[in-house]
Every structure is written in structure tokens, then in C-alpha cells.
Length: 386
Image (tube, rainbow, N blue to C red):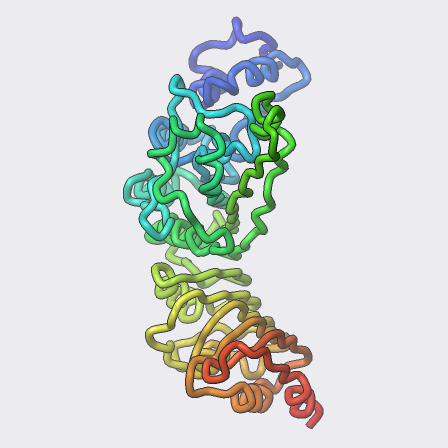
């Protein structure tokens, strides 16, 4: 039977070991759960360990390494959720403004807004994966960036202003989270089955700093900026971890790529993901060289290219192995590089993609024609009917 009070739990008991790994703020709730006679050891371990949150900084990474060394408890960790403390400091979502009496784990970033993974515990996490001391089913990476205007509207933010460099960001840019995801899984010997980009829904501002009396007494309404939030979920096969599977089991992927991380993701996904069935991709950079068609292994059923500027050869190369499998094609807000026309590209695709049953074309542009949207749906329909 479960001990129902903390006083009769020995120091070596699993519950006391769990308590050592928790944040101090969680201990009261944990002790209350332990005192419930209806709660089993399995239920408590699953409740407090199944989703493990870490910033990969300071004491967080130390707790993670200690937990991973405890084999009996580490097996309960199914989800590793990676995020820093930015959201807890954003006046858009909280009235608990920063304090000099607390320390905060805020990721260091370069001038492009990308997390400098070498300055946080990414290498330590990779080692835990390679050693199979942690075998999660899912890795969740949450990139939260506070709007620059909030630092000016709330004087209390000066306490942590130096932690947020740079403050300005393109809130539509989701590529920084993919750069961090690349760093986490690279050299980790994981077996990846899917990569999902979850919409970063703006948290409600009802409990924000604007609820404080000093803001309510303002003659004019202050408007705080909403954050930029990007969330990537990487699903894994723990049974195949440590066996050099890498991307070979990947079935579906959603990617947003920039200059820094595009080479890695394109190489891994296009040339190694032999089981890939569905790909949704946005490329926010100039492709230096197109992957040779003979190196592309993925045989897609669904392909979506959006918010990208690419040469025609890149599109042909991406789909080179999917001629007899691709059923659904989406091209949305795609600009062809100079020297190509959509008339030629769509005619070629309609001829090559013999298994295609549906397509969606939206705001297709040609670099030589400026930014005039072109509608080529009729052309594709004619080829599909032939």
C-alpha cells in the first residue's frame, strides 16, 4: 500500500527520489498527491515525470541529468518539453512582473534571433539520448519571443532587459525553432517518425500587466505586443533509438527553413527519409544548389510548398521520386526564381505526376513579373483531364 504521509517515506523510496528532481514550487502539490491513499506509485510517477519540462540551462539541466541516471524513474519520461522562461516574464500574459530576487533561464540568441545552442545544455541532452538514458516518445520545443514594445511599456522589464538580445523579431518567422530542433536531434541517434509545426497561439492577455491599477488609470489605453510563438513536436520510436535509424522512419514533416538550417533539413529529409509520405515545407532563403534528382529518395503522397522563392529545378528535384505516388499537390505563395515561368513548370508537373488527383494553387508569382498573382488552375485542369 502507498504510504500516505511524507513522514513515513524513507529517503531511498522512489517518491523521495522524485521529490529531489522537482522544482521547489512543485513540492507542496507533490506532497499532497503522495498523501492521497488512492494514488498508486505508478500514477504518481506518471503524473509528475511523464512530461518533463526543461530549459536546458543551469539547475534544469543538472536535474535532468540526475533523473536520467535513475533508471527506474527515467523510464517514466515520455515527453521532454523544452522552453525557456520568456513566457513567464511577458507582460502580455502575466501581471507577475520580473523581480531582482529571482533568476530566470532565458536562452541566448544571435543577431538573427536563433538560440545559441552551444551556450545551453544541448550537448548534454544529446549525450543522454546517445546513451539511451532517456528514451522519450516525443520532444516538444517551444520558442517564445516577447514583443519589443513590451520592454518600453513596462518599466519593470528593465530588470531583465539585458537577457533579451536582440529584442526585435519577425513574428511570422518560425525558422529559429527549427534551428534549435536541428541542434537537439543532430548526433542524438534518435529514430524520428514525424515532425509537426504547431500553431503558436497567442496566450490570452486577460491576466496581463494591464490589469494592474497603474495601467488602468492611464488616460490613454496602452497596447502590449503579442508574442511570437513557435512549437515543434518531434515524434520518436523509442524501440529503435540508438540503432542509427535517424530519419529513415520519418512519415510526415512540416518544415520552415532559413539560410542557417536549410542545408541540414533538406539533406536529412530529401535524401534520407525513405518512408516519408507527406511533406509541408516553406523555404525562407535562396537555395544555393539544387539536390541532384538521383539523391532524392522520398516517394511522397502529399506535397505542400508555401511562402517560398525557388528555381524550377528545385521543385522538379523535390518531386523527382514521387512521379507515381504523389496524389495531392499544393503550391501557395511561391515565387519562381528569375528565368522561369509557371506556364512551363505547371505543364511539366502535370505531365510527370501521373498519379496526381488533386491540387491547390494560390498566389503563384514569377520573379520577372514582379509580384502579380497568377492563376494557373485552368492549365493544370486541362492536363489532368488528358
